[in-house]
Image 1 (cartoon, one colour):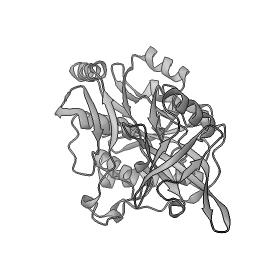
Image 2 (cartoon, helix red, strand yellow; image 1 turned 30 degrees about the vertical axis):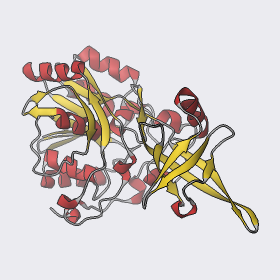
Image 3 (tube, rainbow, N blue to C red; image 1 turned 180 degrees about the vertical axis):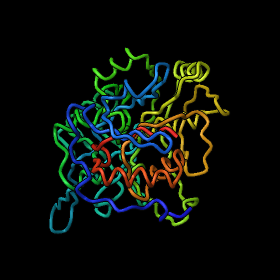
Length: 349
């Protein structure tokens, strides 16, 4: 299939820059087969069935965006340059891969100062990013990053307004536990404690997994033939408890519904056969496009995605390209809010 098969016209004013409050007040497009119904996220306990299982991603977003200063000695004296850094992936030695802007102003060996306590040396430089070696490690690094960093809002939000203190709460799920993501699993942002309690009371169960969402989720697809695209790998884990809950749900006739494309990609990675899944840990670069045979997933709750993105390809794979085009046309006509802080959909093929 071609990249243009996943394009559509989206009015700019449908891009949400702040979430709806309270979280479950967001709209929910419920598409089951060819039937589309306009609901609210708060209606999930009525829509789902007792015995259904929601797969939740417990990753925690770190304040990965840093503003710093690089000082370079020249014949005319010290010259400063402002540098914006977004951490993307930690390495076993404690260094971090990072996107930097402007990249051309950085050379190997130079030091970027982010705060009185946090500095980093440019250990390596590649065409698209750099490797930074920080002066702190462990809990001291975590504390300094928390103080100096900002939430790494997606470009389509950050380009419209700067991150602020409210994003510390808004861009984090209520069940975030395991730090490591540089982007939120945004479908999960619609849940609050009251909704979780209502779902439990209805007989809906939960399985917790972790996929640390990387900055690659925002990178555009640059090839016309989507078969030539390569996904960035992201670290994930499904423990024995989660795998057993998924298997027990399927054995009992319940549905396994991923909350977010990250959770879906992880359970499909860990699937060993149709209807079979085992504990798994590692990096996944699974690329789900139309024609994919889903082995575990019965449904997906997700926000509305960018045109020509890998996530559009994923939802087209789940629902079928023609059906997903109708769903998105309905969402635009009904003025659903799009992207990370926007409304949600519940897709049941």
